[in-house]
Length: 253
Image (cartoon, rainbow, N blue to C red; front, side, top):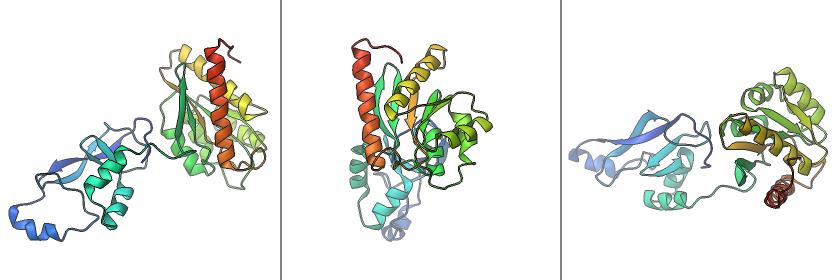
C-alpha cells in the first residue's frame, strides 16, 4: 500500500453481517472474507473518496488504517490476524524507488519512482499525484511501445524534462500527444534543477500546491547508471543538493 494523491476509491464501512444464528457459519468464514469489527459486523464496500491511494488499488479501510485489498487477502490466506495486519500497515512507509517521497522543498514535492520503467507503472504514478506535476523521464529504450503512455503524460503533467538515450523519442511522442512544455537535460542533476524551476513557476502562476516533480523514467537506466537503484539514489542526492543550495540562497537554475 503506497499513499499517493487524492482519487476516487472503494472504501469499506461496517454493516450487519447477519444474526447470532450465523455464528457457526462465521467460524468457517473464508480467510479472504472482509474483516469483522469488534461487535461482529462485517466491513462492506461503499462508494467514497476520502482516502488518498494510487489508482487501481482497492482498499480495506479499518478505522483510520488503509490496507491494500490484495495484501490483506494474501495475509489472511496465510493466517495473519486482522489486528496484526493493522499494526503492520500502520507502520508501513513505502518502498524505496517506488513512489518514494524524497522531500518537499519550498512547496515542491520530489518523488522517486525510479522503478517505473514500464508504461503502465508510469501512468499509475502520474495519476497518483494532483497537478501541477513535472515528469522526469528517459534512459535506455526497452523496446516497449510507449504510444499509450503519451496521452497520459500530456493530460497529467504540465511539463516533462527528458534525459538519456530515449529522450528524443519521448519528446516526439509527448509533443505529438499535446504536451506543450518539454525540455532536455544532459544529466539527472540538471533535470532535477530544471523540473524544480518549472514546478515553482507553476505554483507562482496560481496552480495550487504542492507541485510534484516525479522521476518515473519509462526506460531502463543502463545508459547513465548501473541499475534503477543507482538512478534513484542519484535523484535523491540531486534533491538533497538542491535543498542545500536553496537553503543557502541559491538561484532557480
